[in-house]
Amino acid sequence: TLFPTQAPATCPAGTTDSGDTLDGKTLCLVSGPISGTVNLTDGDELIYELNGTVFVGSDRGAELNAPNGFAGTLNIEKGVTIVAEGNDDYLVVSRGSKIFSNGTEAEPVVFTAKSVVDGTTPATNSLKGVWGGLVINGRAPINACGDATATGGTAGCEKSGEGASGLFGGAVADDDSGQLFYTRVQYAGVRLTNDDELNGIAFQGVGSNTEVSYIQVSNNLDDGIEWFGGS
Image (cartoon, rainbow, N blue to C red; front, side, top):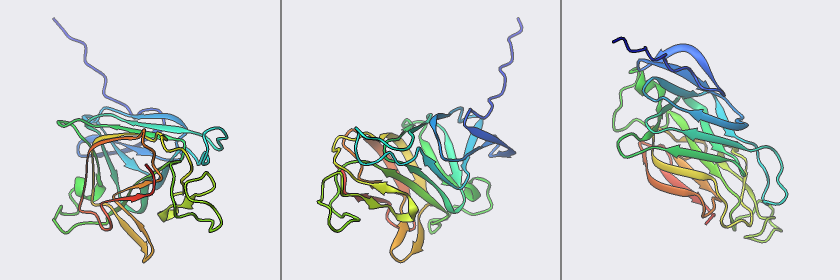
């Protein structure tokens, strides 16, 4: 009996086939801003690269009842690897948008350096700061307001994130930015200036309905995980 041959996976909608391969897989480019839903799938056949600073959605403001901009959702399947290379390559989830990084114990989602995957840079214990990292902006309360006249914990108290990652903060304590399950970030972190640094994962005004379980940041230049307010 002859069995039909399964067609090879192709880069999903919202990504672009680079025409190259990496680690024996088709290399798909992820560019921003992401509007609507983008699904990163088929980690056994496809690998993904952040093409510059990738924003999921645009800033929708500090309040749920008066959203601005547009929303985006980034879904990442278990076993998917996302690579990046350079200070300008990082992922930002804007206020009002969501990320669902759905790794498992056996098949985590991995954000890593492209040069480590292709073998041009040895994965030593001292390697760090190859790419930017992951930033999540939410509408939950903060107390360090960009406007000195604003009251902490209110919708008027918001702040600009490091690395020009956009505004965060508000008065929505149970804001929902999605899920991070079994997700690893490695070789990230960028020191743009002495006061402006990208971390492995930055939770900026992130609300309590955001679910985070089993995350790891390793070999990061600045803080592995940094919280700016939120709940």
